Length: 235
Ligand code: BJW
Image (cartoon, rainbow, N blue to C red; front, side, top):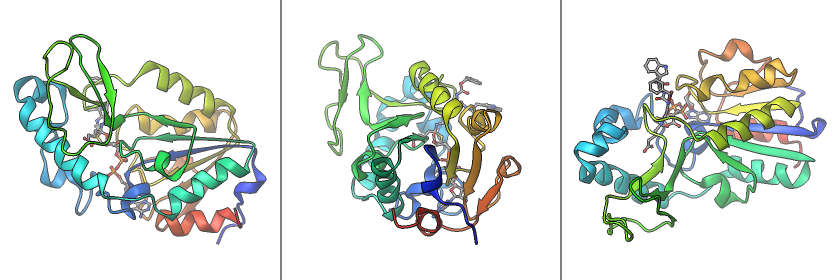
């Protein structure tokens, strides 16, 4: 049991990972049924793979678009969106590329690892956003190079503007709620420590322990929807 209540805080950051969307049917990356159990990230989620075989990388991302496109926000996403409407300041910092927080109605969402629903051209700078699935037209309409999913793959630098906005939200929050991340992918994994250094209360929602569990004062061991409902107190 916990007596922690979202309503007792003014400035809340939800820091989310794949476990947030697991109950929507989006597979996590690691663990049983994880994406990386079936797919080799070196062949489908890094720049070198895209350079050597863009068609295969797109086959993987079109498979993901098809799967994720059928998933709906779950009660946890809904609750996070309601918190934004009810509390003075709420920011979602997500590692997820699925767009489910936005579909649930969250307005202030920082996508650390980009989005499955955005594409860009690294040759001419063209960009687009849309939920077409599969994406059939793979060449940039401006210059003919391959479109690239606007996702942060392994070995890619994160977007500087997103990192800066995240740091600023973390420095000023009084509650950080981490939900469903294994905390093994850097630099994202260490971001909650900024909130800790700034004096925020840290809560971890995850059925499993993580390498960063020791940094959290509160641990809610269970699925995101159930554990969020416990601290929502009628939001
Ligand atoms: C529930 C639940 C329920 C289940 N309710 N919870 C040391 C060695 C080698 C490399 C590195 C190193 N240090 C850093 C690096 C580089 C690398 C990295 O961190 N690697 C580590 C794996 C070792 N990082 C990078 O490359 C990053 N860039 C970078 O560092 O640039 C500088 C640099 C460049 C070059 C060299 C070195 C540095 C970029 C990282 C980009 C990550 N991108 C992905 C791509 C997805 C592609 C796609 O989908 O198409 O982002 S990987 C994947 O992992 C995805 C996720 O956002 C990310 C994090 O995963 P997450 O969200 O934590 O999910 P899971 O599956 O791991 O965990 C789910 C959790 O949910 C579990 O804990 C469950 O228990 C829980 N759960 N059900 C609540 N119902």
